Length: 256
Image 1 (cartoon, helix red, strand yellow):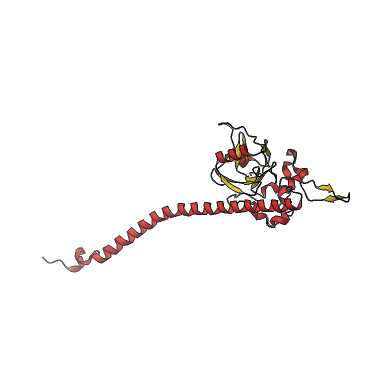
Image 2: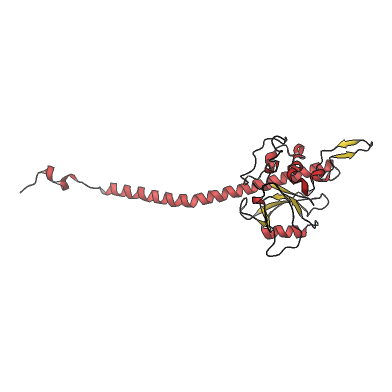
């Protein structure tokens, strides 16, 4: 008996042609390759971004180094934190210098931002003092007290300042990324900005280390000769040992 075509399912189902099947397979393969490629590309892009930000951080510190050298040229080879706010001029009269030596004591830790503010003429833009990898800094637009300073002034910059920095002592550490831990101290947990003495004698249990928060257990440091070094934790310790500053005391910004 002959079955009418309207009841014959097979007669109406032509299926995929060879060309259509090949097209579908190609599309599936493209999607699979795209997914794998994206999985490989995204980490590569993230790594490239981190490298570019690291380079920008190095350039920031170089500019800070140049600014301090320019300031020193106009202030008898002294950096801002070595210059008293008021000095006696050649004529015997008191002169306001703009120096910040009065904020060098450990008890003045809340005013560490003033040392960088003293370089406002040389730096011009406060963004130079913020590492692009440091995500929890204030987005300041000027060096004014209302923008850069005040109660949250120690959140306006990413870089610590070395008290022993000296124009005549090129190996002394002037500045560097803040993300350092040492013993029980961890700058990432510091909500005020402390002054920390590192000294020179380190042990396996107590040595300066970089945290993960900025450059993934790496960091950049600025020496008194204005050179900038990318340093691992072991190199950071060695720079402190090679310094002529026995205390290696650093003035840190707030970590949070």
